[in-house]
Image (cartoon, rainbow, N blue to C red):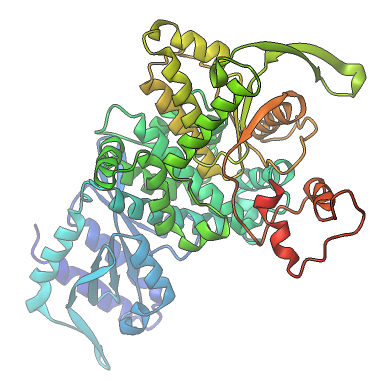
Length: 551
């Protein structure tokens, strides 16, 4: 190592200052060269191609195999700028919350932060009326600190709390990135993202704001990558490209979404945020973490409670505003067993939930009665009206599987022919939807199900849709064809299938955003005296419009 590396850096700063025309940006090339001089594998990217959400000025990455991985960030100010004031700013507070390895510097004073906590401060010079003076006795100390900073590998993530916190940090970073991409000044640079936003508004959530889309999109990517990592059997590597192949084939919607996230069409201003989250999962064995989390908490369904942990770190207010509260496992178990008992005793279906009888129904192919046809479908159709992370759906499958103990040889055939075609779920939040698919997919695997065609297994009948909206007309022809397909398949369940059992735990949300014409019209009869024409005189009508009441 050239022991004059810091002296050369200081001299480069002095030349810029003496020019009398230097701006904050003028000093960055000297800092970039200084940092990269420590190791040939280090790249200090000045204002990387990313949306300007206030990302730190330099992003440092190290080459590992064929990939590059971010190892830290530097926020650089002009020499002499008040770092105490910068340190108290909202911007730096956000950086300290999002980036685990961070430096704040005015090019002379260096403040090091690890996991949001300031660990060390060192000053190698000062700004005076006559120029930049240096403190050479501190050069070696700074070099040692920078070597340690650049050697940062990231600590292996071995517990659920830390994984939830790290996932939440990166998800918030992505949320900010997407929000900035959707501002008027940036929209033209992100045509694919804007196209998807418009498709979501047309098909799924009509009053979806830019901020809400950024939020659900960030959460979905976080949990999509989590899903992929759970299915990853090679823990020593992980990337966007690998994630796309690991998303279960039983979830075509999420796989199509990741065609964009992991493919060549993703915009440069977004890809960096996704890659940083991949680096978090590279340090993680999520299956081991979930198992340990379940043992320590005594939770029957650690995946659901891990999602609660994630939400509390990501945005505590979001959970309350969305009415996201999870039903205790014993309650779910009781409700599903009660349904099974009712089917047997009141409907004379001796197999209860496991019944595979079929009936003939009329289904629509579009265009009214002239375009109807007959179809044989299962009599006992189950629908979780607010599937969330799949607690009710998973419990129903688990209880049905109990009937096949000792008959494991016919279980896989039963699943494809008589279970998946009649167990449905609707969910409007993409992250919960992704979790539901992950949980059911893993449960079926745990119960011994193996698809007949592993390259093209049947999809789970859990759809991203609003239960409180009527079925959509066919929505082909949009750029986001995969979202249209999801809506069309959900519409088939709403329009055609004779749902016998509707169950679940709908959200409690007094300030409901579900105010579409379809559901509000249905609510009118509910707001009147039984059999009458006069509306009830509610003192606080907000609560009668609660989502739970609508369900």
